[in-house]
Length: 201
Image 1 (cartoon, rainbow, N blue to C red):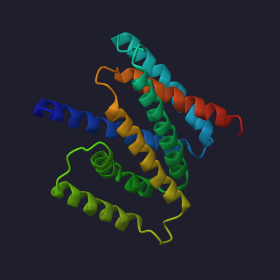
Image 2: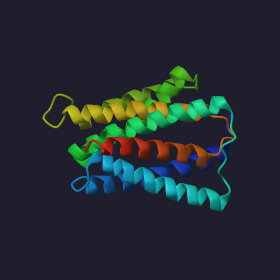
Image 3: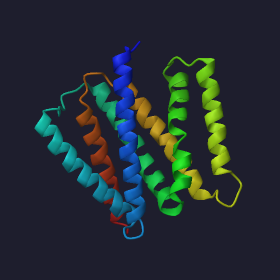
């Protein structure tokens, strides 16, 4: 079981990451009227790769001599990252930011439930009840079957599934795998995906 200091550090890091994701979503929504989707993914992946690589070299946190099992999990995580990026940003381009964000709020709930189902993470009845209430709350906001719910709402839901795949793969990685290696692999994957797709635009 993780000690309280690890939990507090994890909570703070999650809060910081969610703030970054919110800023990222707003920026992607803003450029959506100027850039085609694949070009946006290419630029985003390229810039992210350069920034992460520079930071990793400066901090000495980049290493590629890791186990084959971990490389397999990194590959699976990268697939999840690519799928999440494509489906989510497609939805973001075509839905109001508030609607897309409301659907994405199911991610912590879905990851917690999937962790219990596939990784045997502990999940008591209180947490399970909170997950059900959370899903019900999101459904009240999204209102399936109404005019505001369309095919792109389904895209946002599919992106949640890819995020679950990404996060469960990350959870299974060995603790000695550098986070920079994991992040750069995902950024390169998204950039390459965007580059190939951009050839069709």
